[in-house]
Length: 376
Image (cartoon, rainbow, N blue to C red; front, side, top):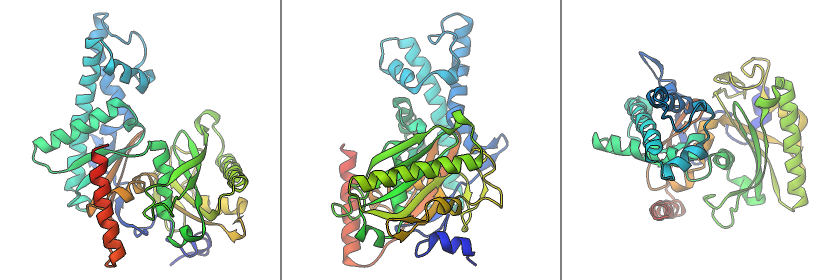
C-alpha cells in the first residue's frame, strides 16, 4: 500500500526503486552474493585492484626495482597507470598488466557467480561502468574478462559503458521518467549520489531528434565532493537543494523547457516510499533512518518547478547508470550492468517489448545502433 509520502513524491509515475520502468523490468539490483571469503563484490572493486597492484609491487620493492618507488598503491592515479601502459618502461608496464590479469580473473569469477544466479539467468550482455571503467587499464580488464569467459565457453558479451561514468549516472535518470514528460519538456534534473561526491545535472532529452533518448546529453552539471566537507545529513540535503535550484535558474536563463521531474541515483536498496533500507553507509549521516526520506526532504525545498508540482523518483545508482544504455540494448532481451567503484554495483534488466509497429521499428533501429557502435 502506498503511503501518503510515496504518492506525494511519485504521482503519475513509477514508485521509488520500482521493478517496472517505462523501458525495462528491473529483475534484480544490489544483489550481495557471498562465498567463503565474504562478499563477492569485494573481490572486484577499485580497492581490490589496488591491493593486487600492491602485491605485485612487493617483490620489486624488496629489490629496489619498484617503478613507483615509495608511493602508496592507492595514491597512484589511473592516469599514471595508463601512461605506463602506453610507455617504454617494459617492466613497469608488465607490472601493471600483472595486476590487470589478476583483477580480470576475479571479475570473471564474480561474473560467473552472477550468471549462475536465478535473477541473472539467460543474460546476453553485461555493461561495465563505474569509475574503474574510465581508464585504459579498466578497459583492458573488461576485455580480458570477456576472453576468459569465452575460453570457458560462456557465451556472454562484456562491454564498457558507452558514456563517461559520471554522465551515465545522470543520463540514466531520463529512463526513470514517464514518456509523457518528453512531449512538453526538453530537459530534466538528475542527481547522482555517491560515497565521495554528489553530482547534479541538467539533462537535455533531444527527444525530437531521437525518441529512444539516444541523443540525450548533459548540458550543465555541478559537482560537490562532500567527503572533503564531512557535512551532516541535513547539511548535505541543504547543499543538494541549493545545487538543484542553481540548475533550475540556469535552465530558465537558457530557455530550456524544464520538466517538473527530478531523477535520483542513490546507493543502496531503495524502498517504494523513498526510504533507504540498506547500503547507504558511505553517505554523510544516517540515510537509512526510518525518520529520513530524501525525496520528501527535497520536495520541501523545491515544491514546484515552473508552474507544476515537482515529481521525484529515486532508484539504486547501479540501476540508473545501467539505464543510460537502454537505447543501445534493443538488439537483445536480457542484459546486466556491473559498476566497479568503492564496491561492485549490479543490476539485471529485461527489455519491455510491445507489439506496435513503431516499437518493432525501434527494435530494428536498436539492432542497427548496436551493430554500428561496434565499429566506432
